[in-house]
Length: 175
Image 1: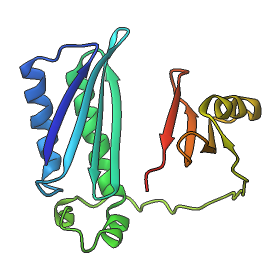
Image 2: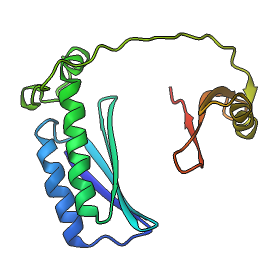
Image 3: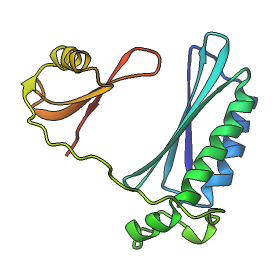
Image 4: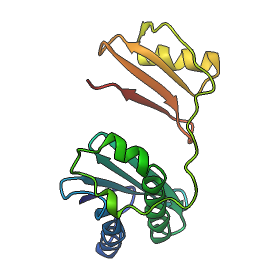
């Protein structure tokens, strides 16, 4: 597994980068060498935040943690990622049975029975063409934390969403 570390609002030391690489190496036994882990180290107010994303053949593992020092956050991020892999091991095996990117034998089994995924509500909605600003306004008007729409600028399905910090995010579908 390749590890790419970037920093935002913070200059990360070589020791911190080495620690991140060492901690994430524990997860590399689950993946082939061509899988990439992107790690963002940033400073927010009085906390340091670690975000890690691993894209493994269309399955994305992601975890983020904030702590007073980044070293505590990286430990919790690695624990979260490892837990995600263990919890969904059986489902991942079914989905990626022919994918050589995963080493399923190395992933530990989850301690308890994985919870059954059930859909409790289903909605259908008509998607209208609009720009991003109109979609955000519509999302706020209906009081939701996300909104699906047809982006009239890119002519693709997009999702706007409200982030934890109050800002907005945009997900653009790529075909």
